[in-house]
Length: 478
Image (cartoon, rainbow, N blue to C red; front, side, top):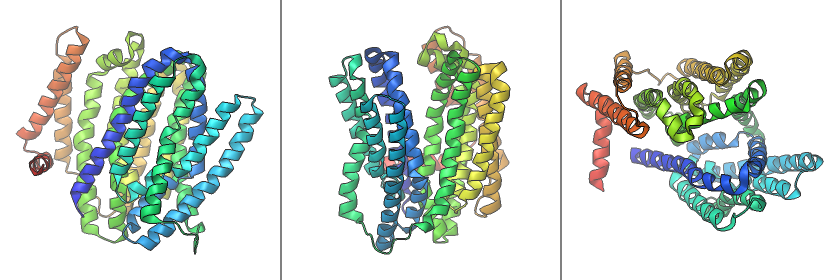
């Protein structure tokens, strides 16, 4: 199998992630001024309900389907049957959750239009079959569709959202991405996959989907409960500081963890067909890439924490500087946890072990939040998140090495090399003089890049040199 497909898919995934941050950066300043905090809050409240309802309705089918399709993507009859079973399960779950959600919202006496759009979003999510495209490694189709739908939504926002009274229309526009996915999905499946109602077996999916859902639900608990507990046990201002720090860190977390969804179908295919040589080569190469990139990213965010917060959120958020420095360490920890969990455990059908690690992490997070937030506020929440991610990564690490014989940890001297170079540019950056935040921010980034990349060349890092050769060959081909 051509490794260039993996490289292209990763680039498309990064492009998609970049768009998910770029479009809000363009639209939110406009919307916040036109709609005001109350209407924005109203829309975000209902949208969060819709997203959480969708999470429950999908019942862990997405990651499960990506893995299983990766195993059978070359077998058309099996793929057609599997796709039909998963789609019908999603449809049945969505209808049930939509009915329950409708009656709950009706009982609360809220705006009927907002209820209708919430249910519409939930129903449209049935047609979001990105899991199919990821399973067959056609990430390009997802990226193009998402970019086009987001661009259309952005244009419509600036054309039609002119006053506070149009907040319902704004909420409706948020469903465009789901609608576009439904239309394109129907076209693609009709043309390439097909649908069948014969000899379907739904029960074979329930056990693995339960563990997949449990993992996603547990993760959602410890990624959402921190803000809820921070608001309840401290103040809304502390929630603001913590959120600003977390948003910045998550941008860099996503650039590495997204690699997991790109590699999962390929790793699952190798595992299913007992191609141990290819599996071992890819999994160990990926671990090296994670260490090579995550260690300097974590160090870099730690170094530019003050400049990043003031430039991104403003001077009112200086209390977020310590939280972002604490959370910067999670870039490496989350990257490793995602690698051992998503790419290793899920690819070898060890979702039960993945769930155990995540469940323990959720319990640790809630306990630490209760202990730390009342006294240390956003710093306490950040510390609780750091320890939680460490526990999850440690659990995934243990189960991965216990169950995957093909996995081998990089040599200690390689890891120490990446750590040494990263710490070197942190210390060098701390000594840079200047009061201009923008110049200082740029100087620290440039210095960090020169020290780290220059050091890799000086030490003749084998993996880095192979990456440079690969990039050079790709450019020459073009």
